[in-house]
Amino acid sequence: MSMNPESHESLEDSARLSGWEPDVWIELSQGALAHNVALFRSLLAPGCRFMAVVKANAYGHGMVPIAQAALAAGADWLGVFHAGEGLTLRAQGVTAPILVLGPTPPESMRQAVDAGLCLTVASPGAADALVRVCAGQTGARAHLKVETGTHRQGFDAAQLINAAQQLVAAGIAVEGLYTHYADIEDTTDHTYAESQLARFSELRAQLAAEGVSVPLSHTACTAAAILFPATHFDMVRVGIGLYGLWPSKETRVSAGMLGRDQIALRPVMTWKTRIRQIKTVPAGSYIGYGRTFRTTHDSRVAILPVGYADGYDRHFSSRAHVLVRGVRAPVLGRICMNLTMIDVTDIVDAAPGDEVVLLGQSGDEAIQAADLGSLAGTIHYEIVTRAAPCAPRRWVP
Ligand SMILES: *Cc1c(COP(=O)(O)O)cnc(C)c1O
Image (cartoon, rainbow, N blue to C red; front, side, top):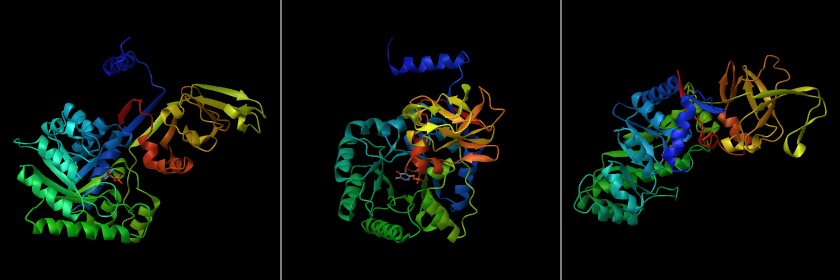
């Protein structure tokens, strides 16, 4: 059998067409997404653009459906990391402006420009390459990223002015000027972010003094968009908040101190599986690999067809809970590659075929991405981004 991606896709489609029910799937709430876009819009001055950041498969939610829905809900721009993601969106008929946030290698620049993607230019080498690639042709759009203190991507002052002048002389539209904060989510002390903002404003003024006026300045990620209107300029770039998640506890506390904690984000993702089997095991039984868990009473153990291969992190072993019929059920023992065991002793109605919520709401209970992040020693950004990459995404109201 050929292993090209096309045949793989058609295989999946035919499985779906014949009524094959997936073991693991992700539901995306259309209402939550639209609510979040509207909420951010309400924080922005008229004319300020809203970029939906859909890199990393829309933080695991599904790039194409999220991009389309975010635009339908009122987003103006899309942000991706790789030019290839932008090409995929174009191939799906997305005509909105798209900014590639990552570096585009010279050999991909022509195709990216032809697809109307706006490219981040953040180094003298990238500026040289774009000028070379675009020689004698128009249509390229560049956003210059400046160094203000994150020391990841970005021009210093001298490089910035050189690059801007070089691009303008080559007929390339210098459409945007931007930066990214190093320490705005992880603290309630925003003096470093303020110093970055001040540095950005300085660089922007220097560029203007050299006669380069750039239509779109942008610096704000979700935390900045919520906390500091002074960071908004002409556009905000919202990722985590679009998906209904606060960037961090610290951002929430900071919002409270600023009187902005009435902001009610609604999580978009619900990650689900089903009980495939229930067995009764006597007190004193070991559950799973390594015998790390032993029952203390006769127990009803449900078997779930999900594991670390699906991004259900092995650090959740004996620590996480899932929701069955709106009730929390603990994970028993080690998460396996494709299987997880849970305790449903006290959920007397639980039965094979029941839906199980791994992440999200069921009844009055919710499993929060942030809590799963803590269990796995990471952040919720990583939990959702790595959720079930191969599972189908389905819209729900
Ligand atoms: C990912 C990213 C964002 C979005 O950040 P959130 O905290 O998820 O809102 C914004 N800007 C840049 C440059 C990014 O890489």
